[in-house]
Image 1 (cartoon, rainbow over the protein chains, first blue to last red):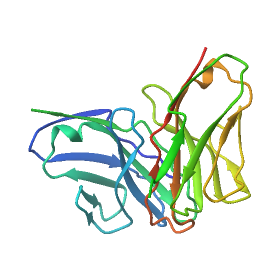
Image 2 (tube, rainbow over the protein chains, first blue to last red; image 1 turned 90 degrees about the horizontal axis):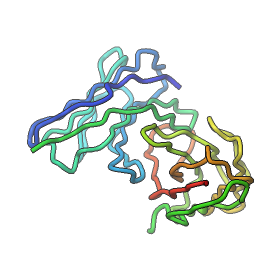
Image 3 (cartoon, rainbow over the protein chains, first blue to last red; image 1 turned 180 degrees about the vertical axis):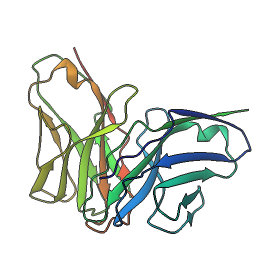
Image 4 (cartoon, chains in turn orange, red; image 1 turned 90 degrees about the vertical axis):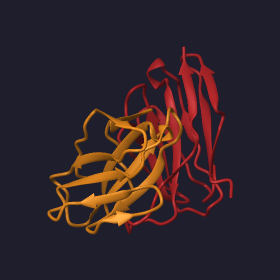
Length: 110
Length: 115
């Protein structure tokens, strides 16, 4: 599985967009990009995933660069409840294992 | 659906004791896995299973055993607890395997302390 690099921490004002970057320069053509988050010490929560195209759901948007070497998770209107650790993970289609890094700790402030 | 359930929520063991962490899912998912999370760290894969009767090792399997006799249950056994196994343990499941295009469901976790 390709490794990912994320900033250790980020801040965002409530109501503003939170843009969380992820570098995955060694990603292979069959590897998906997944985003999860963990609030306090709860179980990780799935946010979104994508392969090549940009994706959007009710929680967030995922922007993947054309060369697929990096991606950005966008929370369009961050709230205090979005304060969490966000994990960017890449995984090949033929393996079910998720390899977590240390993630980005997002702090949303009033 | 109850999703992924884990018991107990909290457990304190003494060094050398053994115990089993329970995990169950009612979504008929083929794939189940166990992770541990140490303070301030990301999750690390311990063991996983792609179906009943099939298990395999993850990143940190030493000191743990698993079995998968049914689709629903995937217990994690600590054979002889050590303080280094103090951690939060998460169980997870996936509805499909081998496609990459799915989300993983996590349980609420078991907080284990070994003294």
